[in-house]
Amino acid sequence: MITAAAVVAFRLWPWPVPIPSQAQVLQPAAALVILLLGTIGVTLSSRVGLPSAPDIRHARRWGELLVTTVGAGLIFGAALFGLDAAAHLTEGAVNALAVRWVNVPLPASIPHYAAAAVLVECLYRLFPIPVLGWLIGRVLLKGRGMGGVFWVLAVLTSLLEPASQFALARPGALAAIAGLITLTFAANLFEAYELRRHGWPAPILFRLAFYAVWHCFGPYALSPASVLYPGPH
Image (cartoon, rainbow, N blue to C red; front, side, top):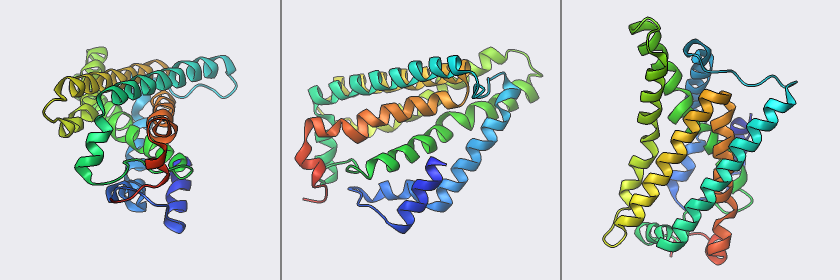
């Protein structure tokens, strides 16, 4: 629902985006396909031993889920922000892309990155882990070694996002990039662990909290003028 509402809103009243590619994530056709893939994965998740979403009547389980995933998302977001502030990684990206800022500004950033969080988790975890887990663990291995299959897939899918960050590498910042990649991998692997522990809402809630720090509110702490007035130099 969050994603669908954001896609419709962006279609009717498009908000400014600093980088043209940021508009692609909310294109109706692409979003529909990604959500369909995520739905297929969620449907198959019980067949590979993953829990479903907690019953809405189980307030204690939801409380534990929210505290763990949202809290961890905020912590990882703050850690990444600290690394960025020390190493000026975003500043390097800004210069490389010839823009003033790389984030959608508030208040549009809230629906924009909320939708992005759902779509990213569909692509990184909710589709590949259950579907490949079912194909490999159930179809090929006839149910043997399901735990091992899950963790192999968890590690491999946790490398997808860090792999995209190699593009930020530049002379003098290799140690910072290594830290960024390590931190991002750890965050993704934690999301896979929470998927196995609490079901499909867990990684989405984690990423919503993470994006709240990293994309929505945190940037104002470093460079409010750049966020308020995004656009090309």
